[in-house]
Image (cartoon, rainbow, N blue to C red):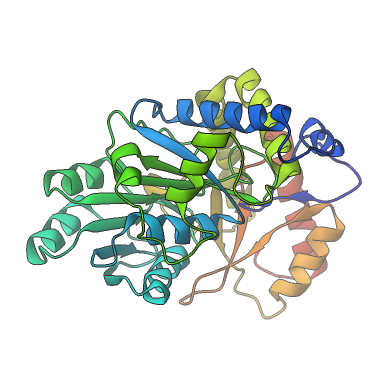
Length: 369
């Protein structure tokens, strides 16, 4: 774990290992056979995490996770399709905005930020609107840390003969998703989240039949996943300049992922981080926004102290000076801040972070802790 720079307790970018950062010290030729093999190995390992080798292609894409979400919508939703977007936070709203900008017909269903979308909701909505072709779900909504019931919703979507698009940005690699049991046309992830790589690459796991049928759908040359996959399958190369250092870092991060014990071990560490965080913060009198039953062990939203001395910017700077970077709240109804549980951190780091939070609030003369 780095010592010179603050620990990132954020949902990505996040604190990476020295080995992962070291992997970026080598320059790669984008057409070089060794780099092509690195990309192929990466995609093979990523597909294995969702047991998707038989049913899906892994299509990497330059850019952030949002680039990959836009590419998936633009490629896999036909121009005459309609997307039902399930919203309980900022990233669901962003997905709806993507549909609007791309000119894809869409409808939205929004629940409160502390209320998961239910399978019964989706059942009712699909019965009421047979024109819906695709349903888009945020698995773990990063704006709060809420976990939506993916398996139950996927079953309803499949039973109605619709297609599911999963934004799994904050869950892939830590929370189990099995392509053999959860039918989806697209699952979207990124390099800089639970895999503990660095940011700069999106990942779309696209159902083979859906991707094959998507020629000509895309609004964009650069974000055409059908073309990206076809070119890679033919040549082994990326169509346009790849993020070579990001690929190398993620390949190294995956080696460490497997050394740690894969998904079960990664989930176990994050769950322990989350539990320690919740317990230690509760001792300070700081309440989490979500009940435990719907709290994913990815990022936790806390109610801000109700004290006139508290201001987030001053709080943030004091905690940063003590070695930890937190995340601002993203809710509209109440003032909050967020603390991530992911990255190359463990329980001792979480305990130290809470101690820094307590010290910062004491220095600010916040009275209620």
